[in-house]
Every structure is written in C-alpha cells, then in structure tokens.
Length: 329
Image (cartoon, rainbow, N blue to C red; front, side):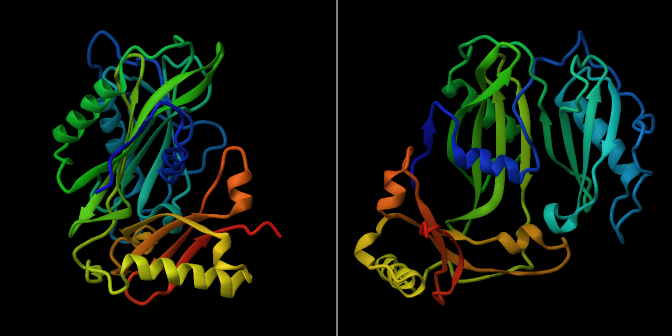
C-alpha cells in the first residue's frame, strides 16, 4: 500500500473529494455553549421563498423525518447548537444518491449565510455528511499539529465504529479566507475503503479537523458498494507493465502522438465504483477492477505548477472507463 500523502498546504485531490461530498468552504469557530441544549424544532425552519416539504421517495425516509434526524445529528456533533433555520435542498438521486441534504443557520451565527450542512441517508437514516463552515477570525498559525489532528480523526472514526477496512490515503492543511485575510483552515484526512485488499475510488470517509481548536468540523461518508454488487476478481488479468503499454498505444491511436512524448507517473489498482455512487440504493451494479494511470507530456510538465493527466482502464478487459487529458490543440 502506498504511504499516506501528508503535506502542509491545500491538496487538490482532497478538495475535489470535498466537492463530491456536496460541501463547500472550510471550518468554523467553536459553536458549543456552556452545556448541551436541545435543538429547536426542525419544523420551525420556514423562511421566505422556501418550497414546501418534498414527498418521500418510494419506500424511503421522508423529508420531515430526515429533518428530525438532521437536527439530532447536529446536536451530537455541535453540542449546544440552537437551530434558527433548516432549509432542504432539492432531492437529486442522480447526483447524490438517496440522500436528504439541508443547509442550517444557527442562532449564534454572525453571518447570515447558512454555513452548516448536514445530509441524511434516506434508506437507513444515517447522517452521512455534516460540515460546520462558519469561520470568522483565526490566528495565523495552527494551534495543533497535523499528527495531533490525525489522532483526533482516528479516534473519531473508532467512536463511530468506522475504523475497519479503511486506509488513510491523504492528509493536508487547507487555507480559508476570513475577514482578516487568508488563514490556516482545517486539516483534511481521506480514508478509502478496502475490499479484498484493493482500495475504492469513492467509498470511504473524509474528515476535517480544525487546526486551531482540534474540533471535528466536517465528516463525509461514502459507502455505496454493497454485497449485491458484482465485483471482478481482485487479481488483474492485465499486469502493470502491460497496462502502461496499452495506455501509450491508446494515446497514440486516439491523439496521434508518439508514445515517447508521454511519461507514466503512477499506476495503481482501484475499484471503479462510480456507478455504485450514482445509482439508486436498491439497484445492483457491476463494480469493475481498474488501473488508475497518471501521466504527463511536455505541455503538462511546462505548466506552473506541473500537471498530470489520468486514464482509468478496466484491469481485465482493457476497456478505457474514463480519461482526463487535454492535448492542448
């Protein structure tokens, strides 16, 4: 297994995954009070222009029940929070799966924006995402180290009994914009699900730990591959050296470029679980084993900072599942 990628600045892959979690922005100041307080009634959350509650998807948890679960979940994550407003976002199964998503404003929030987000799985009622994005004034330097934040993240997952069959793959300190300028924000930790010794592309967790007070300010869970999904043999039919040759041949056939113009930067096996992430929860899908190949050419290397392209190739059939390459024509 490749070692964890631990750096001190914003990690593009981490932020991309955060976007996949349907979250935006950063971390917040401590929202806790002197002691736990019951959240305000989720029903008392109407605001001008908000559409009525959406109907329940067939056989799944409805919006009103999801509101109650969202309020209870936030109380566990942010003790003492008092909810002023909770607004449901459109139910979009094609983008987010069977998930209810809410934007929340707390009574003590000095910013009028709804910077707290929470998502509830419509199948089992589990809170699969929350983010406290409130952030006002911060010190220049983090008060805790990345190693201390890592211990907090690991302990948080153990408390949720979510620490088995996962591998930590990335750790980074991001930056946030505040009224005082750019400041150190949260530490982001990415954990990927391991199935038969192979990591998933999407299934796993993302945690954000505030670098000032060590509070967990964001949690996202992606766990869509089920026992009903068809997965290929975890041992690839196409070995690593052969798949590199196939990629170079594909680039030559597709773009007419000589294989010598490209340099392979990395080759890694993953479960390509994109279809599992996007499908309705009850429908089985085929999850293929895939090689993830990153590469560059002279144009990519000349950019500041240097960039890389990628191809996902089925590790048994050799089919190109997706690619991200701009030849610059």
